[in-house]
Image 1 (tube, helix red, strand yellow):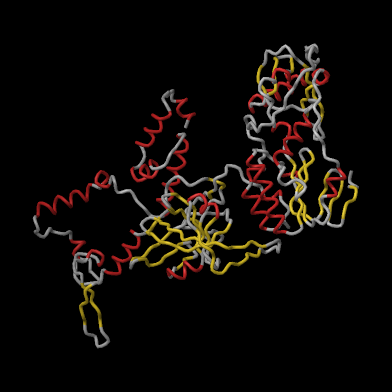
Image 2: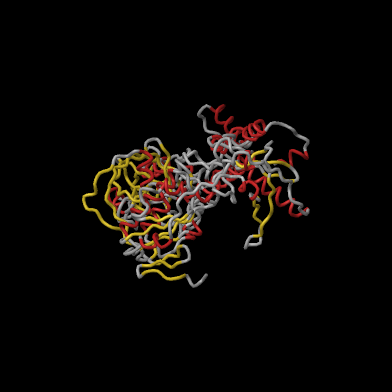
Length: 574
């Protein structure tokens, strides 16, 4: 579209182009396209193409211009009919020879027969006239009018795209029935599954919409196929929902479900006497004496309130389902990248106190080749975009250098030796390794949580940023978060972790800098312990590295030791 406008030398605002494109569409297509929000013209083009294909697939035709496109012959016939004023118009000889197989008259065919009676020949060769019954036809037409399609509107929150479903006239062998419905004026996702023995409402929807729950009269446990664990169902909720003009209430079990917000299982289908056409994936049932028929939505967006999604492929497939559900519920603790911007002020920030009378260092940048200079500039730009550093006018400057990493990339490190020499040393007790390992006696299950770029999750004390300034060929910058290499950085980090997790340390949790080990004697206890620790990390905006974490194992590697229910042993892989 943009290339075509450039070639035609057309320059206009995007809104004007979109308005002209909409005005030029067929009215049936424009009505659908206009209901949706579009950012670019190409989005409108794609939607218009989909609507046009859908109209062709369902046999829907455009009658808006019929009068304009009516053939001349029909206009002539209409004129003749009007001027004749009820008089019989002379028909061509060929028309007089046509015989109607319905009334046995001449001059017309059966489909145009003015006689509304059917001729029935009985077994005794008697001919009997019977009036046509239009009720069946009217009922069929009414059913077509009642056919409900997908609800348009903003979905509660988008999580992922499950699949792009096939069009209606293709086979629906492997497609699940997805639909959108309204729950308390919110658009939610709906799945109909005849294989489910109960109706289900997701915990997320119930909490977000504030639906009142009741105790389940017969609590039960869900057992997964891999025998990895059980999930106890203890609550029910009555969910009022609507699809078009159809309003209903359904009693659902509350379950942590992420494929959708509601699942209508066999109980709902049994109560409503639902008929499922597997070929077209259409559900039909009677409601208040009228037939209701519903088609599947063709492209499905499943909802959640998180923008990020926990990649379960990175988890151990043998994890208990309750642990997996917990990790998915707290998935924002495990982002792929730490969110941009400064960490929150927690009351513990890194401070740098210079020794009174010390000379402030002012060292020039190290010599670098063009390749290293380019890499340094790239990393500085990334830190600027994240908000971790800013330009500086500090009189205290130290150089930076590049250190190779195991994967072949480079890490930018600040040479803090000059600053550390004139910094007052603060001591915070670092836990002894043997004391921590003694706390693990009797534990059966372990989870290790590794924080992501731990130092970068702590802010510099306001007013001390100028003391971290580093110089490069193209500028001078200072840190707003705690960089690696500062003399008191380990003490600051350990002080923060002890402050955040003080309620759990030496009860079911040990901490050594950015390594957190949660230990328990049973699965139920471990689920509770892991939840409270992750809840605190979420509250304090501390983020973990999922790839380096292990959950609910009977053996874990912690600080170079293999910790298990049988005791301790040295990690031989190191």
